[in-house]
Amino acid sequence: MIRLFVIVSICFIYVINQPVHAKQIVVCNTCQAHDLGEALRLAHSFDTLLLKGTFKIDSPIIINKPIYIIGEQAVLDAQNKTAIFLIEASHVYLSHLTLQNTGMSYTEDRSAISLMNAQDVHIYHIHFINVYFGIYARRSTDIHIAFNEFYTKSHKENNEFNTGDGIHLWYCKRVDVYQNKIQHQRDGIYLEFTTNSVIRQNVSENNIRYGMHFMFSNHDQYIQNTFSHNGAGVAVMYSSYIEMKGNNFIDNNGPNAYGLLLKEIHDSEILQNKIAYSSTGVFMEECTRINLVHNQFLSNGWAFKLTGSSTSNYISKNDFMHNAFDVALLSDQNNQNVFIQNYWSDYRGYDLNKDGIGDIPFHPMNFFAYVVMKYDISVLLLRSLLESVLNLAESVMPMITPVRLIDPQPLMKPLNK
Amino acid sequence: MNNTIVFGISIVALLVACTPRPEPIQYGVDNCDYCRMTIMDKRFGGELVTTKGKVYKFDAIECMDQFYHQSHEKMAIALFIDYSNPGHFIAAKQAYLLQSPQIHSPMGGEKGIAAFSSKDVADSMQKIYGGEIINCPIPIP
Image (cartoon, rainbow over all chains, first blue to last red; front, top):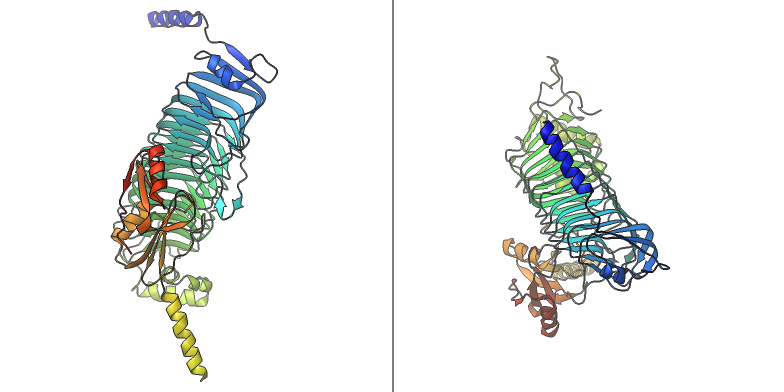
């Protein structure tokens, strides 16, 4: 043990006594180094560029060596005509910068920071103001994106939305997206073909399309994020082995808006999320082997919709509270989707043996939900006498609603208060 | 007399209603009828109209292709969005399609497909983006 300690100490002393090659270059309008591109060309690998003041950018700044670029109230203004940073090297560190006014372009996916075949890149504390894409990473690995904020004002012009995605990852691996605040972009965070990544504690709100969007991205986690007021909620599509835990999906309203839209997802976990105040809470299409456990569905229009092509999903220990409709199955066959031990605020049963589990099963899909699915306009009759009569008739003699869609052990008390 | 007029008007209305007619895509509002994504990118997309006049909208040619080959309906009109003239339709039959790894269509994956109205534009884009000019996957009118 002592020997190990001595060896470690010697190594440590050796490391800290190494001559320091990397130097710091201050770049500002009145400094010796006043042109950012020039300073970058002259800098050696692992040097630090300290930027001060406002820089007008006329063409993209290409980073092709390991470097630290740190701002002190530095603003890089692209004047609506160009992308800003293009990172083509590994070991790059960017922090404390304001990047603004990239303008938009249809021919390029213009972005404030784009990465191409880069590794070990750190992007911290960047403010993005009126950018088309914020960060666009292609074929890069080990990226850390944290504490960034977006202040883009998107506006609708001639039936077009002139904004791109906040953070777009394409064919990336091991990306850590942590505590960013993204708003008013097209998709807040978009993962395409991106694996082994973690998206945690971000806030993504008021985006035009999705707060977050997954396509063909396997083995990812997203944890404790908040997605609210997004045009169409969050979409997770064509992916497997996704863990979604402790997120808030709130206030996603509209005919095509979903708190969480799942399409062709397999073998994934949806745990401890709060899905509230949305037109449709969770929508599942062609999903298999998903565990939906310990979630809270609160005051949604449709809490949980699933298609007949969704099979072998396990729905347990969730609270379904005060939703207009709890479950809607868009098929008359329930394909091995198990509902067990959930709390349903509409449950009217009793618990004689006091084990906390209702003694009569609960049918989470009522007849009126079926009617509304067929004829949208009949939602006008919600909470009417006719609705009660129809539901009662169907519960006495089930003919239309899927008989096997049933919670045999409904809980008497909600799990979350 | 009155009845005849009402009858006549109804017949005309019915005929008009059933004529297959394309509809503009409302970006940010309409959903793709295949993948359910909200249609946002004005450079990509397409539309199918059935012989009965039902309109299907798509965010990418890839989706439209899949949908067409899984559908049992008879299509009357097929349109693609012109990549070089975003937001505008061109007839699928007259389009030149370029498939390239440099084109990121919403559903393209490795190689996205873009549609162009003329061969010259498609060729010049091929010089920039690489990839190949492909045949239209949708054999329609």
